[in-house]
Length: 155
Length: 223
Image (cartoon, rainbow over all chains, first blue to last red; front, top):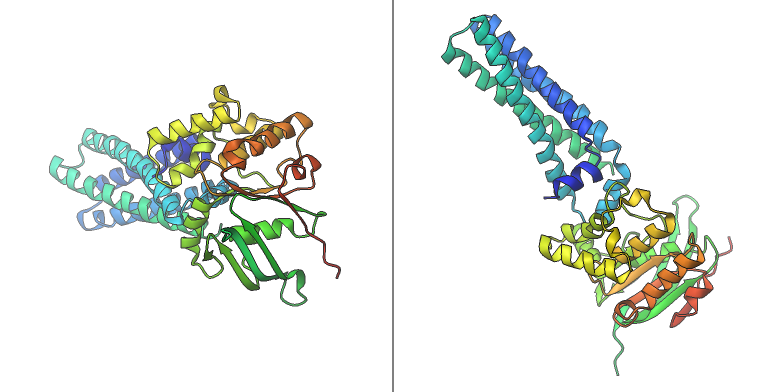
């Protein structure tokens, strides 16, 4: 794995871009959690799927936009012997870590709001929110993977 | 006594384009022995860079064999070639391949990271290289803030990071002022480079050709 400093600077994973990823993940999680709390039981299980789709799409575009700007440096990294899989793995881990942070932050915030509104029981709320986190994280991972792979393949 | 060849080009032909191909080389035979310092001299567009790219395996010839350290690299799979290239060549292309956002030390460290060299060894080797080029205190300077000449010196210094047996340098002094050129020439002339490595350099700088063992004239093909 490449050192974090090299990834952030060298591959243009700028902190502002990472923060945006974090905010988007959090917002998706908060809204999804609140949505889960306000709808009836059968529809609740569609919300993790929605979180999957939204997280996936937002990460896909964010990652593509970010990596495309580091076109020159990716070429340099490859010339210096970086393998395709090392770049893919490093970028993916870093992006998914950000998605994870955002999801957890949003999860905590959303669940707190849910309980404050007293719309669901503790056990049900916890189960539904856990499903949501997995949905959002799976979306983040899949979206990032496809975005990174597509962009690297084009270099 | 048998001569050990670092690089041998056998009947290499190269042309660009499919419909009306532009021939760059036809049936070229050149060999560079271990420890040789060869200068490729010729006008712009004569094919010096193409020749270096063929030797490094970035370009495939249309015909012929490119034998590096006894191995034909033309038919080598891309993944294997990337590893072989990193271990065998120190490459300084005409357009500097430094990461402008990283520091000097990080740039020198990069090829070592890709070869999984431990952090302690990387730090030690970075310091050695910085000492060798005479800038031990500039390790943390961001490369984007350096002059073109300083970047060239860093690029050449970095090409020795993995201690490769062959250096391929493409017009390293082209954009440099006399003081910087002296620095580059001194680095090439240093015992570490000249006595231990095969150096193939594309240049039309007299100060560089003067110290070369062999000068190869690359002529532009007339259409």
